Image (cartoon, rainbow, N blue to C red; front, side, top):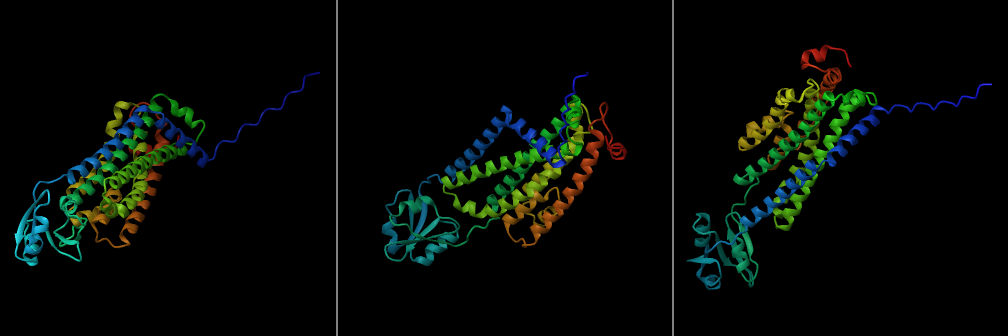
Length: 374
């Protein structure tokens, strides 16, 4: 008699589209986290942000010699011998305030309530004056600085633009390079035998989106700690809401660009050809940076850019920081960005699945759109 045949083990069910996407995303994340180059560059970036905040605080709070301070005769004796202060004695309170307004002195020390004095300044109180007085004075600001004034406007615009550009280019290029490497080494054929092609694309975008948002969260945390330690709570108050909106816009805007990076890279099979196909999306990533840096004082340009999907993730948070934006405007801009992202992701998925298995020469865009899926 023939020996009984052992029952065959049933084949495991293939993962669902969502499960396969998470598998690919996890692979992307763990691969990057195991890369020493990624970890070292991230650590250096965090240190650079912290060092920049500390250095700017030190420079801003540096002790100035002989700060000119106006004081009427009634309180001049209390100010005359204070270290780091050059007394400008005037007739009365009105003359002292006038000296502050015309810029001839940085502050005016006037009689206050009880033993405390009153310090009148144009926009901000010199720390050397506040520290020199025995009792902390009541500070009166004649012309409070606005969020959108001069250097503050430029620095915030630069920060939003630079963070978005660096994160999008760094992780977008990673998606593109991995895509070409997998095609060139035929690893993509092994991957697609286990997961659907759209799960491969979605997983790459999702995994790198998590890494990009994680890096931004780390940068934000370091910046908050640095500002809190250096006593710059005023800056935190100004940028709190715009930063929250920036994170939301970035999350959607990065998916938009990441899908284009992946679709563009799937058109070529050699690393030497990658630069040419991703150049258009690279310019789409760089342009918002130049817009907010060079046109942050142009309300019309910023308003238009805040509704263009590729520049909205940077332009709208900058406008929110500068003020004068209606409550519905960021919501409308976000809806337009989401709608554009959905359309672009669908188009990118069509290109990716029709070209990712094609090797040899560069696949033309029109050919990828017309050809049947792999």
